[in-house]
Image (cartoon, rainbow, N blue to C red; front, side):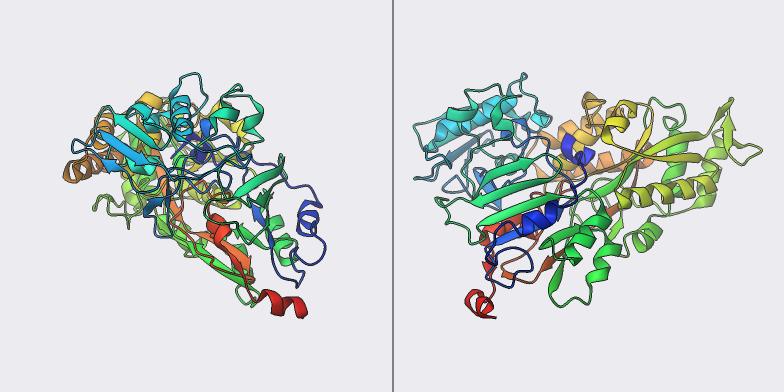
Length: 538
């Protein structure tokens, strides 16, 4: 999970006519609802990236459209070669990874891709002067070297089991990005890559527009124009999809249900690691109290949230690891038990006041809970959480706001946050829980500080031994039962509604940071139009 992941990424509302303009920007029948052969698509997403530079974190999990990594994930989240010609050769000690590169690949400006671009990308990401919030994900990397133009050798400081999965990181061109300020240069908004699409326009808060890369090494996409319309409001996204302004959109369960009987569209449900959680800041005198944390952990009715808010499209969450993951520690599920919550608070000295709100040493058991304005799922989770907390005698005051409003308050105020990353347990837990990153932007937003967890996280990422790793992450999850610095609520399935105009649509297991690189358009470059010629005649 990255800083951007838990943040959910700031987004702006779509200008009124944007989606319609984007959908109809190609006269002659390629826009949404045209009836002609489909060589363009417009999809509605909720968030936009802060940057398009891989050096600053964009494309670190793959599917960046503009770029490729050395490796990529297939539909089943198995690693496959991308810019590398094959999977890496790993040394017996687990400290050396050697990649042979694909020959004949060029960047979209025609310049050749070589090993020096890989070395440049990784060295720049690791440079402390680079504003990349995910640098610690490459903590194990000691050095990266080019051997000629077609071989790259990575040397690790310690065995890091999921290192190969980290090499889906998008590769930037040294001849362009290396000549600019890495943090502020034009490359951050006008990138050049080796990917299946080329960025043609980025209107901040409105849309990202792409055209197919005709020289893409894996073949030019048949969807020639691709537009991501940034529409913050869930209801607006559903309305524009229904009106034909969009070809597809991500929607919350209640709005996706409205398209259930629509024969012209299909609904895709993607399994995810995406969770919703309430941060319980250590520096707040109420949420920093372990008894309050433990009481809220059992006072919350997670199954009710799954049933009522998600309409069944998800499952209860007891930590960052989903219950159906092989890494989940069985026995760490927390049963909804209001009586147990009250008993914990009673024994800790939190006694009910005249208005029902508990008090201890003159301190009322109340705190603010912020959620991102316009995000209905977060709002609904926040309201349900506050309702459950009230029954235990804890007053939670929910408030909506932008990230600009919320971020300065995160040290002491609770936040309805999101996060989660598929694959290795290190991805889910390290940035969220290590005290080393407390208060580092959107890493460890709760300022969680647990020495046993810190040690287990380091143990888990510093060995290739699966048995030892499983034991380490079991410690982490069991410590979260004893002292939960977050109240985990649900893991959410992502729902997408898309016009039934193409073949080849699938979904992957998705992270929290979804919409841009995930969804059925994770592989839009592989879509094929249905009945192109026949459709054009109708």
